[in-house]
Image (cartoon, rainbow, N blue to C red; front, side, top):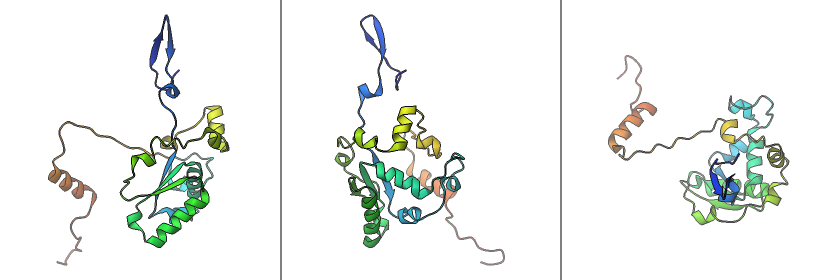
Length: 189
C-alpha cells in the first residue's frame, strides 16, 4: 500500500504512488527553546516522568531525547533568543554545536526563520541517517512510532472563511486562561 494511497493508471494496470515518487526528504530540522534548553538538558527527569504516554520500557531521560533529536538534525533552530541573555544564548549554541558539529545552527525569535534555511537545502543524507542505530532499526523493522503518538504531541489547525472578532477573542481567551483581576482574601479590600 502506498503512503498516500493514491492510485495511478499505467496502461491496463493500476499502480500505487509512493511518497518517495512525490517528494524527497530534504532537511531534518530540530527546534530548540533557548529559554528552557539548558534546564532540560541538565535534567535527570525521565521521559516517563514528563508524560504519561511514554512506553513503560522507555528508560531515556529528557536530556537523552533532546540529544537524539539534536544529533540527527541537519538544521537546528535556536528559537526564543529574545528571552535569554547573549551569554545564555552562546551557552545553548555551544552545547548544540558540541552535540552536532555538522548541523547548521540558525538563531531565531518568534520562530521567524528564512525559508531557504530549512527548505530545499538538500542537507539530508541517507548515509548519515543510517549511522543512527535506532533510526535504521525502525526503518528496517518498519516499527517507527511517530513522536506525536509516542509523547502525546498534538496540534490543531482551525480554518474558517469568517475571521474571529479580535476583541471578543481576546476577552474570551483571557477570561478563560488568565487571571486578569487580583484575588483579594475575604475581609480585605
